Length: 505
Image (cartoon, rainbow, N blue to C red):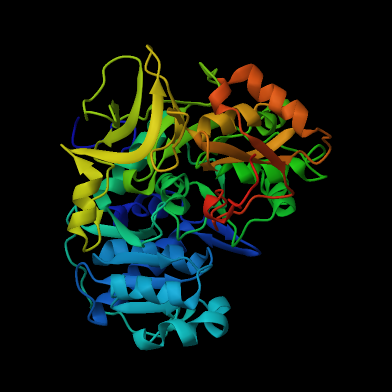
């Protein structure tokens, strides 16, 4: 591997990514947010000026800047300013309760806490009073002098993003991503699912999530493309923006595409500008994927996690899935392997095991938590906690998480496999499976399913569908049809809130 990726000829340090677009297409829109449009010359100048303001205020290399804000122009300016000043941006999840936010602030110990006006009256006072919060919008103005302040040299391994993640443990940790991690993640994305300067990217993922930065948006800004930045997700507005701005690509979790496809305007909206759509975060229901394909939109299916920057595996747009639920092969510059869960061996050839990831995209570690970092790494590999299957040609699919697996009658059952089979039924929009105690079998599965808006189906038919495609011990003991599934703010199913006191006798 060379010093830089041949197909991503931008500076490694993220702070310099705006330089060329600002020079070569200064008036081209970098961000469209609502009725507001910011061109590249302005975005570059604001970021440079804010970097000098922050240094002039006494912030030094490695200091954290915490934010509480929906997706915003100001937060983008701040990210590039932090990159130029050698600071670490710690965007907080504004969906969290005051107590949860206080825990993260205690962990990250920011030198500066900035709160958007939309969050100030609702959350700032009770949550961050001890951190002396200041208005985020005030920093992207002429309020603070920056003249004469010089910027420090930035090391490629300097931290840039501190993303809170708790996985299934519920204990918050901070995953630290460096300039190098972000560079190689975007280099691999460009090599596998490329953008160009004429693309219009719809940015839907929240900026407190790694995908809000490292899946398409940072890549778009490095190339001089336009990002239509949305503060929050609304299915009808997604269709409106695609049509109005001639959006060429977007990234979302499966729920994004399910809800947009269920919207009454989906069939009539002009989607002809879309080159492809990226999906990740969970298994994509077959029915939803088919509906987008019927509208002529190719899907790129991916797998990743925050600690990997996040991209690890990808099935490229238009590439035929080798088997149901496939998430493709490793991204360029990323290595993926399987680890035998019983003896820890790295497996060769076709097999099933815990997914390992290695490469310059893998995070620097958990913030001030060497024990958790050590547990996550084994001989240079990142342990994902996800169980995957690999065929002889090197294609992967996800079977489930090691912590979600349950044992029924002595046999291992991975919920993701059962969810995939349920979601392949054309009447099913989404599914979630959990294990619950059983006096005879130890544990049995309970499935919660959401049907498509126009579908009528009974439990008996779904059970027959499962029996036709799964071993008997994997068939859920009970299937519950529900109006919706509990979800995290990013849109992933949160199984902690699924009822477990279900009668399975």
